[in-house]
Length: 185
Image 1: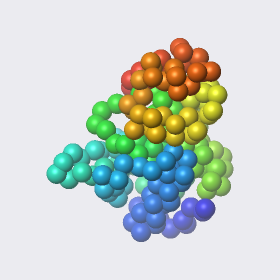
Image 2 (image 1 turned 135 degrees about the horizontal axis):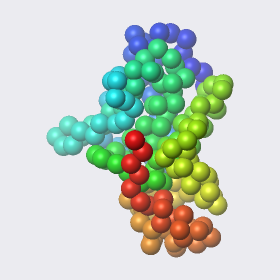
Image 3 (image 1 turned 120 degrees about the vertical axis):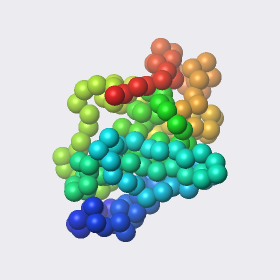
Image 4 (image 1 turned 45 degrees about the vertical axis):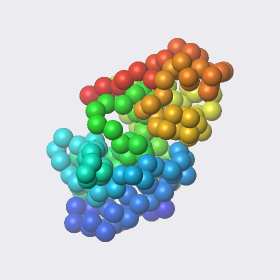
C-alpha cells in the first residue's frame, strides 16, 4: 500500500480510494462494519478529527478530518485510520477506552501498512493511555477487538461484567477501565 503523491485537498478520488482501503484493512483486523450506515466522503474542518453520525432517515456516517491533514497525506492517513475504527459501528457522543485504544492501535498499524516513517503515535494524554490499555490485553488490540465486536456487536457496547468471561486471563481492573467512557479532549 502506498500513499498518493497528489495534492490531497483537491484529489477527492484519491481521498475516497484511501478511505476504501482503510475500511477494507479495518474489516480484516476487526471484522465487518455495520453496513446499515452509508459512509460519506471525508470533509475537513478546523475542529476535526471526529465522525458525524447522521441518524435515520439518512443512515450515514462521515469522517471529519482536521485542517492539518488537508495538505499532508500521512496526517490524513493517521486521522482517517483512527476514525475508521469509529465507523465500524458509529454512535453519537463519546465511546469507551476500549474503542479509543483500538482506534489508536489501528492508526499505528495503518501507517505501518502504508510505509509511513516516522510512525506517529500519541506521546501523552488519553489516547496514549487508551493505547497502552489495549496493548495490555493478552490477545492484543485486534484479536480482542474482533472478539468484543462478535460478542457485543460493537466495541462501544462492551460491559465489564461480560468481559470477565470473554477475557478470563486479563486483569479485571483493566477490563473495568476499558469499558468506561473516554473523553479524550
